[in-house]
Length: 318
Image (cartoon, rainbow, N blue to C red; front, side):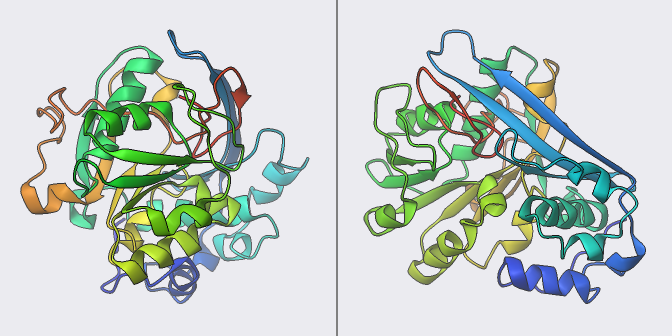
């Protein structure tokens, strides 16, 4: 089904209240989670010095799956089982933020799936090894960013492939992740994104900020100061597009199953950004703006060289 609310949400709390009020479709009290599961992985791309770990909670409502990345091992025993058979409205009041985010994402995936009618533009990902697909996704994400060479981008949830794509565009960046560490190029990763906001011209933000509670201040800063904020989202892939115009300028949405689960071709869904103004050439089967057929980059994570890091939006250092 597809029911697009006529007015964009003003914030994440506002979006949740609109969902509970039925603005985006059926009463969430009438929809139950049929399947709940977690996905865990560890990765070290060929040729990269560091690796990362991912753990994701996913909830299925009908045919739709919503997800939220968590710190590996952070979900308490029984959390997955508690979700099964429970209605979405109840889960939106769950004590665990990851459950609340995954439930909201699943509901919106059910009611506002990633289709052109809901504002999505498909972008093809090529088949290949994990690094090729990571770099491909990164280019699709970064090409949404309205920033000129020499400007500084705050990257919240460090992904090496994203940093590489920013370098290709001549953009400076400030890598930030709660885990700290260093990037693939030995650059220190700051842990306080808010301390760096004033010095940056644009924001590139992982969807995992929804799951750790750090997203709203970033969104509000971008809104107040008119700065571009591009989100790359496995976590909350159906949530963040509903915030475009309220501090979010563009989203590269990647619902489950994520690119790192399979070596075959895939697709991500882009909303807003430069493609809206200048024309989107990254549709499935087309040649992407970066000249590699819509080849996209890594899932947002932390890029800690020489360490197996926890995830940023499902990922560590990529």
